[in-house]
Image (cartoon, rainbow, N blue to C red; front, side):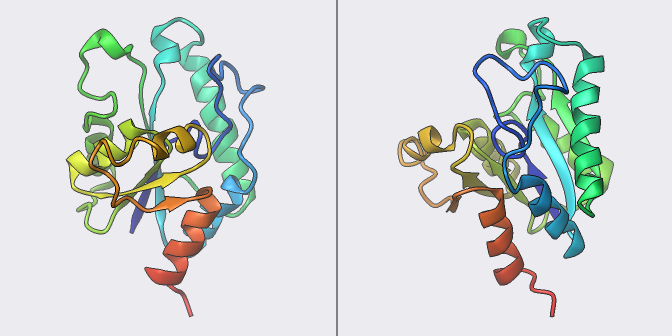
Length: 184
């Protein structure tokens, strides 16, 4: 069982100025614990994140790795783990195949985790996340953190009004544990 998470706005606080260092990378309240709870229920966690700040020169791959190391260490300390991180360092106009809403990051995760993608969720805060999930044929879920409230107003126009909406990652985890995979 696999849950794919967007990073900025789902796990950590987002900024229109970009998060450019591990020192600036701060988790959204409850997100790290939510990931650990999923892990304890037998879920594997992967991250699919657009990181155009690398392509824009705002931060290096080394600094991106430091941010990811910090995130993984916090999750490990909470009793969970992140199995795989796929990121797109490209600019929106680079015409790559990995930048969401395209499915390249999700394909990387599928290949790396040898997962059939049956009953997989992608949790995001933007239309791009939901569109990538839908294009890949997996379940999408929206959180209201990050850009989620803005995205919420765009769901109907995008044909995504069926996507479940949660206040935050903790709300999603509560729901999936209680309805899809209760451990008793």
